[in-house]
Length: 345
Ligand code: SF4
Image (tube, rainbow, N blue to C red; front, side, top):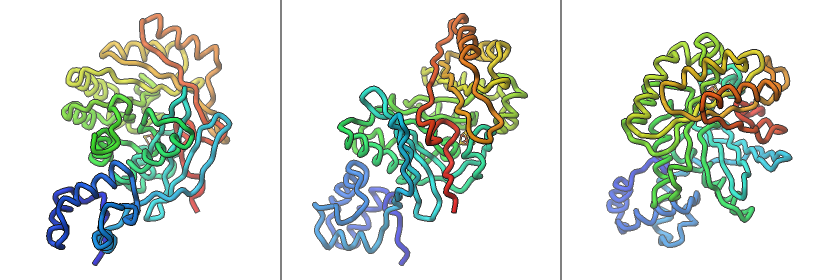
């Protein structure tokens, strides 16, 4: 009999399975706690189950584990881990130290189909969606790492490999596990999901009344520039994206964030700032300006500090909320848009 992924088994299915096999049904709750609260990945660690139950589980189910493949630590303490998945695909997550606490940047897909021009992951193409277990495991591992440094994990951002909203069900189920009292019990306000801008899915988030933060990779408020940087804009132009954000704000009462990677001579002029300010008039929004890390062989250039300051000043003069995000992990390619496992062998 082919084994099943235990993290894809509902509590009801588990209870039925235990009952059919003459085991106590209340053990389903214990198993659930071991998996989603304590994060164990080995049936032997479920120490309050009798040996017979553990053997039965082992014979029927498996864990879709992440195996650390390569770990790199940057001079600023940022750690990038490349994980090997059960089927040989690879993903990455990044643990970023902050003021006393840590943020983890997690992947939602192996590869990505959206092909943003500034993004290394986009060049890999799409492999597959991650399972709920594979997403939550990145968080479990990050939490353990933070605790090893006598700290804690405070924030989770879905800004690693993949477009989270194209793996909608698994990402939302993972967040449900992360925020549930029966899971990791983290606050949804500590979670940010970042999308390239899929309007139908943004509306779905609004209808689902999500309580986590939404970030949109905008990178330009000019149609032609955005389409060149992000091919997804050809399918879902700026007006359609704006309409979905208006709907999102109306339904959830929360203000999304725009991520704006500043690229010299591409989107960093005052004219670009004006287009951005005009676009943002339609809904309340915060703006994160992200500085580009020049990568070897890249067609893009870092925007000079003077240009960046003028850009930000222009927006602030229009009363916009703007933060400049310094990239972390520069020396290990762990910064935004640079996740792509280089060991593809
Ligand atoms: Fe995909 Fe995000 Fe990279 Fe765009 S930036 S190609 S959406 S991983």
